[in-house]
Image 1 (cartoon, rainbow, N blue to C red):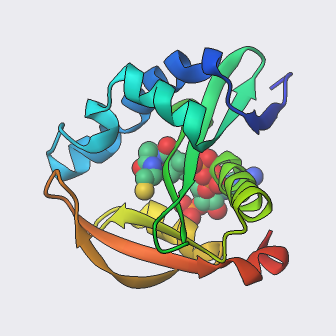
Image 2 (cartoon, rainbow, N blue to C red):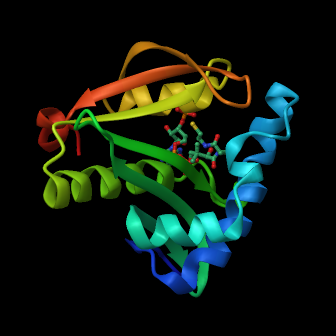
Image 3 (cartoon, rainbow, N blue to C red):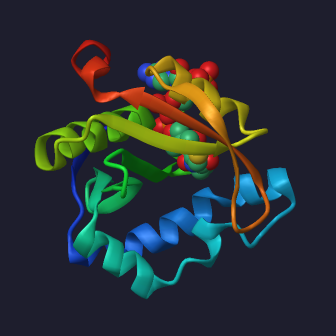
Length: 165
Ligand SMILES: CC(C)(COP(=O)(O)OP(=O)(O)OC[C@H]1O[C@@H](n2cnc3c(N)ncnc32)[C@H](O)[C@@H]1OP(=O)(O)O)[C@@H](O)C(=O)NCCC(=O)NCCS
């Protein structure tokens, strides 16, 4: 591959590409659960635009193309919530997902003083769970998404950030 993938903060102009990319990437999760109403597939472009404006959103770029994305925001209890991590299917398995995760974690610590990170994954999404555990997340509970998919909730203290980055 001639060009390298770079990670940067998403801009307003990226919203449409993020919207399309997440629609493509989350098809595999929808198929796994037989549920095409999962949040990343039903989110509107306007809602993605709002997130880009208000949250910590990062993109992975290959030239002009957005090939990966992740969102982070601070929740009411002070934990930073990370979600909608996705990488274009043709570029998965090269560490881009882990790089996006690290970028979001670093920004949440630097900008919002996050003390811990929280994310969730579908209970049967073994690859996702493996990725999160490998970078230091541990299961803290379960939750039922609005779409009905049983989720595993994982957390990682921000204090471990320096050693796992
Ligand atoms: C989840 C997702 C974002 C991961 O992105 P990714 O870029 O493939 O992630 P990584 O490359 O960092 O890690 C994936 C695998 O590639 C391996 N890998 C990482 N760097 C590698 C490299 N340089 N060479 C070979 N393999 C590598 C990792 O070890 C990991 O292996 P594992 O599946 O055995 O744990 C991507 O699969 C995706 O978009 N999935 C659909 C949407 C989704 O489910 N999102 C998460 C919702 S919870």
